[in-house]
Length: 137
Image 1 (cartoon, helix red, strand yellow):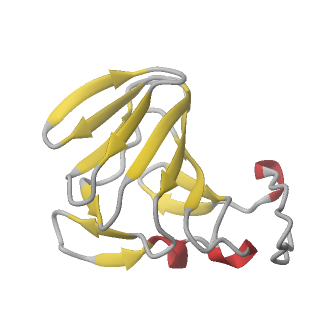
Image 2 (cartoon, one colour):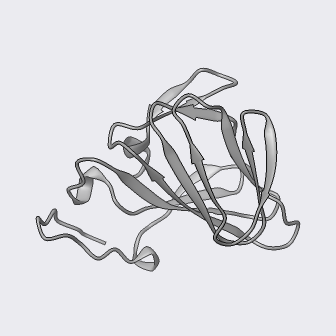
């Protein structure tokens, strides 16, 4: 899908956007990014295969995640929270967290929003830090 920045906004269709494979059974569909003209936020959808998880990480800004579909476990600062459709997290900058698909058989999908186009992800185990927007091509 080719999208040009428009001052009046954009309509984004996840079914037309090529997912970014994140490894470990997770893949991300970028939605609002710098590429379409956003200057203050990022968002998108991450899909998790059964039992898939993303590594424990932190961000340099606030993040909110809503479960769109499936059964999730949100690990926030060492505490596991069961989540279902429409349950939503708010994670302050610097708080270690991750999401896990709690199902052995069904996919899980989350919708995430970062409070900055300059959002970064730092993997706790390695200290590797990368720009969120640069991961989403």
